[in-house]
Length: 188
Image 1 (tube, rainbow, N blue to C red):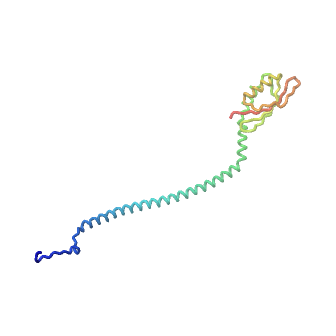
Image 2: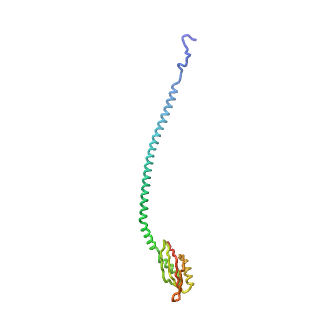
Image 3: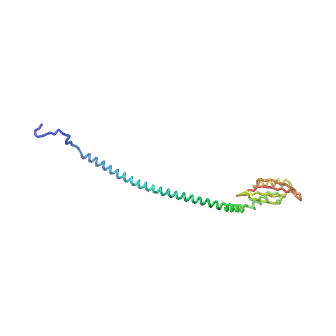
């Protein structure tokens, strides 16, 4: 050993450390943590604000829906009452329109087309039954049975249905007179 110089063997009391590196590392980590925390907080508050706005918007929309449904129920009830009150009037007007829209010219023209030249209609009693049908009872006079068969075949071809011969008789002139019942379907 060298006299005058002491060597300190106790290194544990004053260890040499590079504190700057660790301090820099701590400062960088704290800085990154603060940076991430700042933007995380900013994102959190932005989305919290948007969430609150959405909740308020949903509540307003739900209220509007409830109000609209309530109004719809009121109007539906009012509509049903109005329908019940005016059903008779509407049905009457519809019946009048249907009767007015029935083409008597077309009906009589079809009846005349089906009638053979040697035959004639003696009486006619029509009754409108529904939208497009009419019940008809009439008497037709004809000289021969072939005229009746021709007449019935012609009726079948011109929208006359449910043709029934109710009775037959001879008149004073020697003509056969048959009472016929049928249904006529008009064009709609």
